[in-house]
Amino acid sequence: MYFEIDSEVRGNQEISMFRSELHRFAKEVVRPAALELDRMDYREAAAKDSPYFEVLRKMKKNGYHRILIPDEYGGSMVGPLEFNIFAEELAWGGVGLATAIGVCQLGPAVASLVGSPQVIDEVVRPWMEDEGDKYDGCWCVMDPDRGSDYIMLFNDADPEAYGIKGFLMAEKNGDGWVLNGTKSYWTSSGPCANWALAHPIIPPHRSPQDIGAALIPLDLPGVTISGPIDKIGLRDDPQGEIIFENVKIPDHYMIAQAPDFGPTLMKMIISCTSVYMGSMFVGVARAAFEEALKYCRERVQGKVPIIEHQLTRYRLFNMFERIETARAYLRTATRNVWEEVFQNHTYYQSTAHALAAQTYCKNMAFEVTHDALQLHGGAGTLKEMPVEKFFRDARAALIMDGCSEILALEGAADMLEEDLYTVD
Amino acid sequence: MVEEAVSFASGDWFKAAQEKLSTDQVFKEATADWEGCVRCIINCEDEEAVKDYSTEDGIKGFLGMLGLLSKEDRLKYKGTGLEKLASKLGYSLGDEPGSVDISEAAKKASGLTINDFKDCVIYASWWTDRGTLKEMAPLPPDKYVDAPFTLAGSYSSWKQLCTGGQTAIQLIMGGKMKLEGNLKYIMKHMAAMNQLAEIYKSIPLK
Image (cartoon, rainbow over all chains, first blue to last red; front, side, top):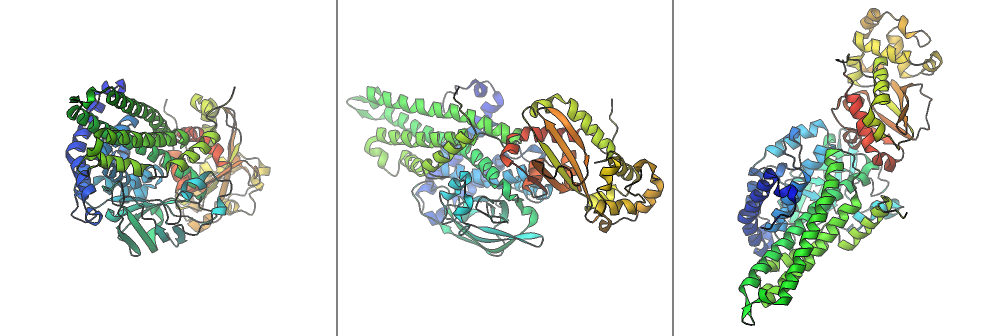
């Protein structure tokens, strides 16, 4: 654990307890399972008897799948600080599982913001009551041939030029919708989920900006869930492709069906996921830092523990400095997202600030995990050392949820559009 | 003081909304840099409208709303679904709405079905400029057709918005209401839209 500099956390008994409880959960449940999943065969990690599902069940038992859902819909909505702490602590345990826990509740969370009373009653409330395997969610964002396109097109002056080929498409059909297309193998938790929040292109299909949001039960006819992929990082969150062939859903499962508001919807979602991602990678950096600290106290070179060496101390302080500044900025950016999205419902959050939090924290996590591994010397490269996983996870983060460079370009466009800085 | 409940979209409802929008300090602040008229389109071909307009209160409210329009403006609804509905209630657009025998109209209304509401649309304006309410009233169909913003939805969706059953963003995202105009401008002023909904919500409905 760490000294909490923020008096808003330290002085609040409820938040402090929330943090302690989450840390205990991360240490006793998430970390052991994450290390085990990381070292398992990627197919076994996604199999029904995998520790992945045990963690999700325990997570639900603790009510952690309700933290983004308003109380009146059966949730137990937290504030921005708790949200940061939640993501940081879980990712301290294992960033793949923290991702899985995040995407598991993204569907009901978006439904509780923009969905109809019918979908709240039919899906969100039972989802909140589930403590087993009935509602395990995934987030289908990207399409196989559309990587950075997904982010770039939102600020493009000519989105129609992107064409709509290769996207998951939704067509109105009687009282419902029919879905056709594929969501790429980067779908987080895809191989383990039975529900999805997916983003199809909706009529009038003018451009990929006509984006909607659908809640899809994955046991419907026409859904094929492909096997998991083998990858460098976040091995504790299985990812895989999902194919939709003439999949029919009722109208109210298309929770966002206003094509003109596609970019607004996506910017709202990306702002929320950005601050979640940022918090997670503060957690990964902190986990690596703590491992380095422990190792530097134990490892003797030059007749003394290496923590006695000036260069080691300098490096450790530098890591500490980066983690603490990232967390402080992240909390400010999160508060803005929280106020505008969840409290005021204006959806006029600063996407630029949220993206800055994401890119800053991910870059910071890569640097800090790199330094932590370096401080371990050769031991840091051993598969048995947790720091080796943290480094791989942090490397994957530079691409996960949008590669850092593209997120920065989107952030730049938002920064200019939102007129955040003016010259006097 | 307990406010008297009014029928949704009735003459009294428009008057109550006008009063509140003119005096609410939070709304003034939220609209401090808002400019432009929102043309509101209420599609009454909807079971909720059938239910409301089958009661004496509903009919009184409907006629009260028409009473806020000049005779000339009322006549602009000629040939529309609204005129057909009015005639089913025994009212002709050229007459004074106050002259209608409500109990007689209610007898006629008791047999109304959704078919009697075909193409029946009520147009209204909400126009605030920099914190000052310029207009909150029913409109003739041809007025402000080039308004910078249009918000359209079924009678029940509007009622949901005005009772707090669903927020504007839920109704718009869910495809229940359609907003046209400069969407970026609207998003920048979503706090004003939300406060508008809060004020509507504060008007007790029968």
